[in-house]
Amino acid sequence: MYVKRVLPNGVCLISEKLDTVRTASVGIWVGNGSRYEPAALNGISHFIEHMIFKGTEKRSAQHIAIAIDALGGQANAFTDKECTCYYMKVLDKRLKTGISILADMFMHSRFAQEDIDLERGVVMEEIDMYEDSPEDVAIDKLFEKCYEGSALGRPILGTAETLQTINSEAMHDYMHRYYRPADTVVAVSGHFTEDDLDYIADLFSHMEGEGRNEVTPAVYQPSLMLREKDIEQNHLCLSFPGVSLLSEDRFAMNLLSSILGGGMSSRLFQGVREQNGLCYSIYTFTTPHLDTGLFSIYTGLGAETEQKALELIVRELHEFCENGPAADELSRCREQVKTTLLMGLESTGTRMMTIGRSELLRGQVAAVEQVLAAYDRVTAEDILQLARRIFDFEQVSLAVVGQPDRAETYRALLQ
Image 1 (cartoon, rainbow, N blue to C red):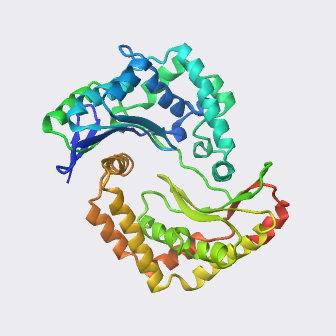
Image 2: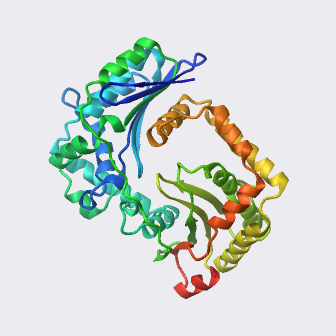
Image 3: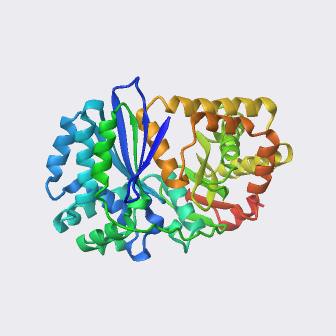
């Protein structure tokens, strides 16, 4: 059962008590990610995420690291397009100490210029690390190309040019303008007391600010991105406009993704890998956002086999749009999706992530039973109609990283 408490300043505290565990996971969720950034400050949200751990007015970075280790806890953070999350998992009896450290980092970070200058190099190494992963390059660069010209298309990590301009003053100003109480959710899952929740509420009642961050709608454009890279395989990402994370079709979309490329029994895994031996890895995934989304297919294979693989993928999508899923196929994938959901809820960390993100981005948290019922209501006809709407080859996008062929070759294959 979820309990929601809105503080006078607008911060939302949402909690889920579990009496059968001895740990508590807590996350501070902020409705600010890379798509809210001005173009000149691209990457500042992720940079701030790093700097939160570099010291506060009363704790040094070393003090923070030692204190978290002394708790036996785990602390981390991440930034995506729509939000930033700072989270921790501790024993229930250490929750107050843990959240006091996390709240101090969140509200009182120093952003010392000398620390920023050092950490800038770390972020640059992180950018280089992603460049060394052709799978990530294919997926990320296609996403940037599809939404080019809009904030959603900018990279989460920023660029060498934008990172160089970010200083202590810019970080303090950005936090003041974009970290707003009404855009903040503190999510707690696990074992805790009412006194713990009162303590958390008191900590965050001091957060200041007004208003909410506004999303600028993104515009999708069909794209072809070819990048040469001295590697053995070609890495392909094929994408279509999908559905948003607020859409009622998101349950059908997840089932469609599972049927086509969600596991070893999926159509693309069986057709491209098992029956034809054309690749080692092939899978589908969805990227939902507040106002838009993508449905994507990834595979990595040799340049000599990519044409046949693309032909098979295109043929499979056309065939699916003709006939839809088989009854046993839908039943099997429905159970797979529901089981994955339920298994994930055995972790307080996963439960905290679920309720925090749902409350922040959807404004509500659906009970597990409601989510399972939503999947049960999806019919084969629902999935068929969604597929016919999604797989419009006038709107298809493709990225190829490795030793790509000519652009005309790929355009012909995708007709």
